[in-house]
View 1 (cartoon, helix red, strand yellow):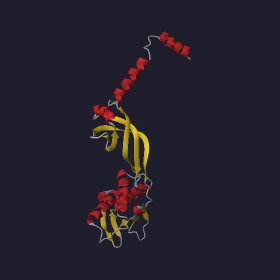
View 2 (cartoon, one colour):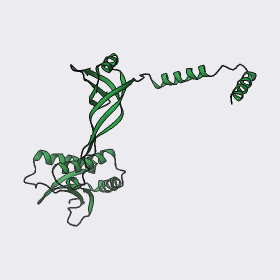
View 3 (cartoon, helix red, strand yellow):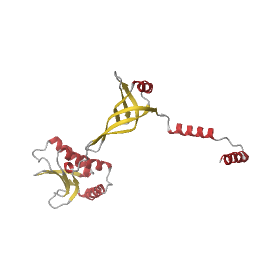
View 4 (tube, one colour):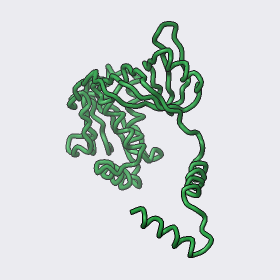
Length: 247
């Protein structure tokens, strides 16, 4: 008995590449969860239809998890699998649906718009003043324009340039965290992601590398310098009176 069927409006059981079918099956397994209780039932004729059978005891759990996914409360693994399935269908110029049962009588559980989803417009390049920060991991260039590379976690910012004077100062801070200020050109692609096309540095700051404890200690030190140490209540009263005279 088929409990769920993934319809993919592309290929057919005879034409879908085995590697691509395996990807769809893996993502479907992630979407349904409870992998020990989910089994491959077969491929239906027509468009690609991947059928899954759920062990009886796990059906209520799978049904519950899919309902939660529809309300935005699914597990991170299921949410990722849903997005991956939609992206795969978009890449295959297809759309799809997850049906309860074999799809002949069961209702649609999840829609995958895939290639039919509205595509965001391309914007830019847009010129905007702003700042970038990260670890200065590379600086160099043989002409009057010097190129920089900043690393911020998993993100690398390239296409950053500055003049030689700024480069000489920046070279003193190689592998230090910095923040550069200047004018950037950004492009938003059809997926909605923004890409830095170029950035010209006008100035920069060297960022502190201390821990939160170091920052708190420094704040405490500055506070002590700003306020006197009071010996008794009369000292406090004198300071208050001085403050009132300044008003």
